[in-house]
Picture 1 (cartoon, rainbow, N blue to C red):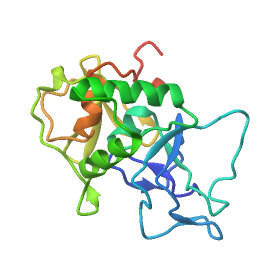
Picture 2: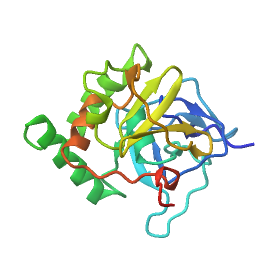
Picture 3: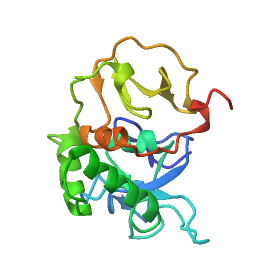
Length: 207
């Protein structure tokens, strides 16, 4: 039985076999004795996206009273949930993300704490996932943005919509409308300013 540590685009932490391209964390939110989650779903505003492998180091998942290892299908899912690149194990990506954040918002390069504070307000609403109104037609959103249609999450790429499912992304379809924007607006601006996401192979029509 998989541990409860896979993150959905809506930010929920679930028990499914999917692991994906990235790990990450929201602080310490598990009991190492039982390897189960506590009632809280974050203990820090720094919600990170990390590399699964870094300088040959390996961690036993949920084994220590350290950060709780979470897993994401890809960067689109991690961003939709409200996480950002880690400045330790993904320094290049984190610096590029921060630069695109500044460009997208027409501001000076922000600190990590500033981004975390803004993201925390954009990803949560009274402790639950915050969804945002769609003010832009779907075809004008950058690749990698995730939107909600009903209870389904779709990643937009190349004019097509890929539904997130437990094994990756379902075959693409044309999506005319959606109900909500899942990806926090500040991250959408960073993506629009040129941040290049790493996406799961199931969203690659050439794979």
